[in-house]
Image 1: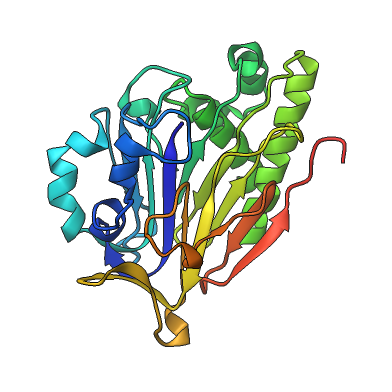
Image 2: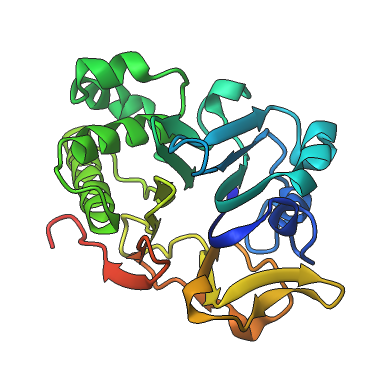
Length: 287
């Protein structure tokens, strides 16, 4: 199962998340601890923001395993950003292709997904029919993840607000539509829907499975004044309040387990423009 992370706080090198921690995302790409299959070698993707240059993120993706990508290893210490989204892929829907690597990008938005909708083929045509022409033509890959992101985009971009609450509302609308599609086509298998969406200013993560009898995949968070990596390791450390940082990951990156907490099952994590974090329950279909 895929592994992901999202960081928002003071600018830091991508290396401090992908390589330097004890259980970094690259480590998780070949030795994940909280899933039955430890390998996530079907490609990776990295998205990051440099707000002094543009509101749109940079994205780097490859079909090579993250642990074996020379370019990523060279780049990571030199890329510095206040908002980073990264993903290592274990393919479940769609071939191994750069078009199917997360995070997916539209204008100033990034999205990554850990989970699957199965059997996606049963609802894919009906889902596409719900998309606007613009979003249908925007699709490039085959994954359930990108199609769900397209559905989210139509709901989010129709709203006037552009903040974490609006992102959570649009994700909720997308979950509701997915539930309706599955019901209409007799799909009863649980869908894993751990997701992160960000525009570089606000960020929303979801830890969700649409079957109340099935626990969602792991998702953890840590927050504090700021995140540092030095000779003593990687950790949250005290600093002025205005340097508040939030880190969300499929698996804790560091040994300091007391600093990491589970995201509550079937909840959104909302991070606003000032890096203040809050939680909101996800409404289940029929609830």
